[in-house]
Image (tube, rainbow, N blue to C red; front, side, top):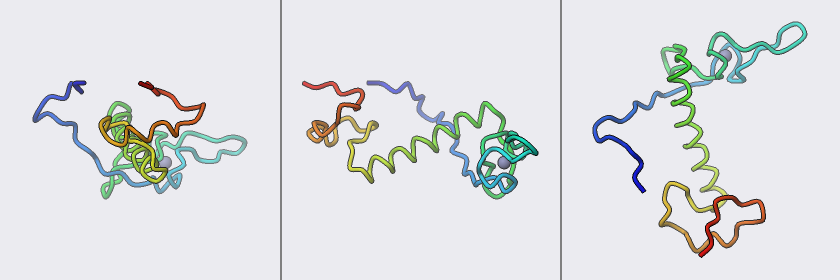
Length: 106
Ligand SMILES: [Zn+2]
C-alpha cells in the first residue's frame, strides 16, 4: 500500500498550543449562544510561541496531524493495533467487538 508521499516534500508539522482567548475550546460564550472564536479561526489552536492563526487550509492539515497523533496515543493506551502499522499486533484484532470497523478477518 503506497501512501503517495513524495520524498523530500513532507508537509511541515507546526507546533500548536491552545488558544488563550477561548482556552482551546474553539468557541467563546456570547450573550445567548456560543460564538466561533476569532482568535484561533474557530479551531482552538494557535501556532506555538507566535500565537499566529493558521489559515483554514493549513489548519485542516495540522489538526489532522494532531488528531492522528492523539489517535495513536489512544490506541496505544488501549492496547489496540495501530492503523499505521498493519504488520504489527495483527493477532490481537480478534478482540475487536461488534462495533469494530475495518476488521478484515482472514
Ligand atoms: Zn480561540
